[in-house]
Length: 328
Ligand SMILES: Nc1ncnc2c1ncn2[C@@H]1O[C@H](COP(=O)(O)OP(=O)(O)OP(=O)(O)O)[C@@H](O)[C@H]1O
Image (cartoon, rainbow, N blue to C red; front, top):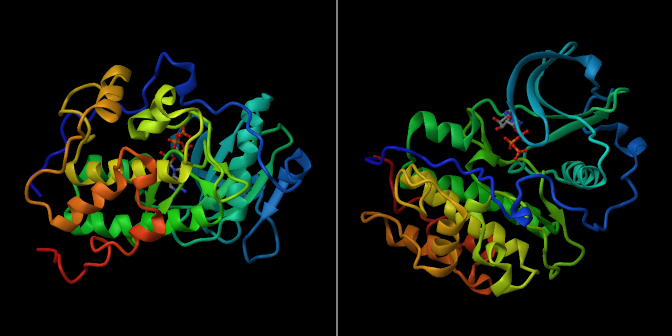
C-alpha cells in the first residue's frame, strides 16, 4: 500500500458554532425505561459471575486515554486477574450532561453484540463518579492503528467495513444511532475484531422512522444534512448519518489521511462545509476496485434518502467479495 499517512488534520474541531460543539449534547427526550435515577445507575452487572464488579475489585494498571466524557484505564480484576477497560466519568451535576450520560449507560446496558464493545458492569462511587467496566480492546482505536501502521489495504478495509456494518445493523435495528462514527471510536483487538465504542453522543430513537435533531459529534465526519441545517432542516435521519460517517471513515483508512481535504490542509468549518455540502466530493484514488468505489458512492450520497442502509450494504459486493480481492 503506497499511501503514507501524512499531515493528518486534527479532526476534533473546535467550531465557533455552538450547535456543533463536540461537548455532550443539549437535553434530549428519550424513551428510556425508568432507569435514569442515580439508584438505577449505581450498580449493573452483566458478567457471568454473580458478584457485580465495583471499583474496589479493580487495580488500575495504566491510563489508556481520556476524552470529553472521562478517563479510561486499563484495570485488572483483583480476584480473577481478568483485564478490563474502566471508564471513569465525573458526574458534573449538569442536567444536559447527566441526560446524555444516562443515554450512554442505557445503550451499553441494552447492547449485546460481538461488534459493539461489551459493557460488563456500571457502578457509582460514593464520591459520585461513575465507572463503566468494558471489555479491554488491546490494540486500541483504528485511529491509533492507522497512525502507527499506516494505511490499510483494500481487503482489510472491506473486512473492517463488514464488521462495523454488522455493528451498525445491530444498533440501527435496536433504534440506536451512534452519531459519531470515526476511526477514534472503533476499537480493535489482537484477534482483529473491530467493535463500535463511545456512545457519548448517541441517541435511542422511539420509532424506526424518528429523526434526529442533535448537532453533536465530530463535524469532519458529519453528513451534509447534519452540517447544513439551513438547507436540510433541523431534523435528519440519524441512521443515514451514521452511514455517511462510515464512508468517510473507510476512505480515511484506505487513504491514510482525512479524505475530504488535500493532505496537510487543516480542516476548518467553511472549508468542510464547502466540500461536504456544496462541492463534488473527492473520490478514491485510481487503482481501487469498482466494488470499493461503488460501495463508497452508496455511503456518500449527499441526499440521505439515497444512501444505502446498513443491512443493504451488508449484501454489497465489496463486503461479499472475499474471493475477488486477495491479500498479496
Ligand atoms: N474498551 C476499551 N479498550 C481499550 N481502550 C479503550 C477502550 N475504551 C476506550 N479506550 C481508549 O481510551 C480513549 C478514550 O476513550 P473515551 O471513550 O473516553 O474518549 P474519546 O472517544 O477519546 O473521546 P470523547 O468521549 O470525547 O469522544 C480512547 O481513545 C481509547 O484509546
